[in-house]
Length: 205
Image (cartoon, rainbow, N blue to C red; front, side, top):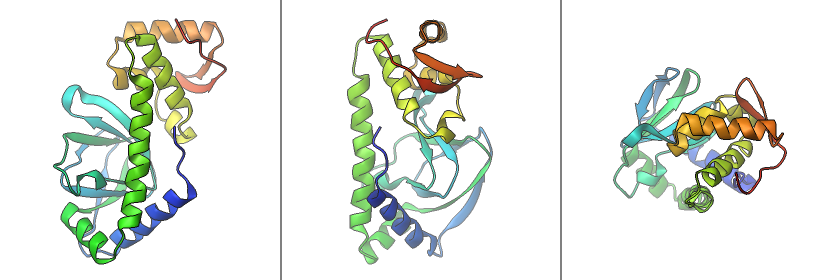
């Protein structure tokens, strides 16, 4: 996974600071496990871990950890059918997409916008490249690597099985079989169902 660069973090801060000055900013509380639609708004996440899903099949797309901004992709395109969940009850700030667009235009923050979106697109292509495969095991392997490269906050917020099942749509029985065999072979380490490390992962199962 592409780790956020210092430049990316700087541009996130620039946009967050600009949005937070808006009179249109609103504070909302999302309770743990509750769905909140990502529709026609920008979401400013200052801290906490959130999972992002697509409504179709309730498929998990990714985890987002603050500081982060959700919804920038929809400044110029129709909103996709996505929603988010907070891993713990969290308070975030939100403002209308049109207001965010206005701020970016008036304050000439396109460099920050482009930097953030470029980073996000790179993450999408990286995962797409890993998971284009006809092998279910290769898909699981890619997701294990992806999870392992996430922050400790993300890894501690989800079990390995849940992460793989929600992202892949594979059957629980198959996922549990693969994880069991990988643990027996000492390829992965888990504690209370959560990933604590990867020793190595075989190319085939």
